[in-house]
Image 1 (cartoon, rainbow, N blue to C red):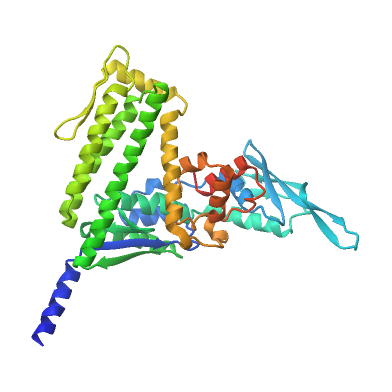
Image 2: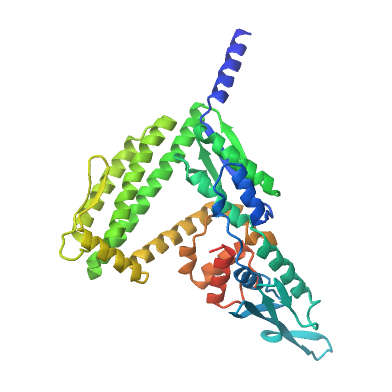
Length: 427
């Protein structure tokens, strides 16, 4: 009896002083009006300025692309003077030899022209087609997205910024994040917001402080930190290759961002060690080697400002220094402001593509087979980035479009499909 009571006491103490919490969410067909979301955020102590009203013209164009199907296709013909013009197409049909009607799969003919008047929030639709199922579907969906914010907005603009803004945050597994005890109150406030939206929830599961849970969470934290370091090293390797092939120099702003990332990782390593009581010697050693390699390369391969020498280094206290004079800094900022996207920006897109592929592979069978209408805003179980979509080929775009539930993904031209994906993502 004494042993049993002692065991019960130990379990209760472990639960009371747990290791933290796992957090994940469900946003099944979650829609909320902007004004309602602002009130919920404000009442729960969050910044309500993040909530912007949907752009009616953009949402209508996205709805037109999304609602295209075998029963009817929509093409955006124009967006001028507050009027969005959309073409409605259907497949041409002809009589077969047996008297049955057959469809010419390769030919779509314009049947009508629709107009959405933004200021009036009204449609002008020819009477001949206004009762078509495809038209009714377009009207229902456009009315929903013009006046409401969906699950994609909630995830990308509300949930993830709060979680990723915590001092200690990392993904334990696909769709699940670690939340430390110290931040429980913040996440509970977020939970109240999400539950009040309706058709949605944010879950918290406490992690008892056991040897097994300590090992699992520490391993996830280590994997996250090592992953960030390796992404930085991949970018450094790309810079090295460009420097060797064509003498490409790294912009001072890009060099500074990389070194600042090393400092930020170093700070979090110590924070994770204090919070999770985890061993961090291996991570610190890898970070030191990576940072030394970066400094050595960047000192000789960072582009120079006018009449200055460029010196990149980190002080003992972790302060990043890039040796540019004030004039050179101003010149570099001006150049960056007026310059088009270059190879450095393409590097970021490459990283996003690599992460996207990794996330899709990790998701595996967890990705849904039949997304359905709600998935335009909700089905994505991985964090697609606009930079990744911007450089995808047609096959990859169609795969992403399938997960988003975008109609007409096999018939839309590649660039039209790219725009449809970006708009469905809210980018």
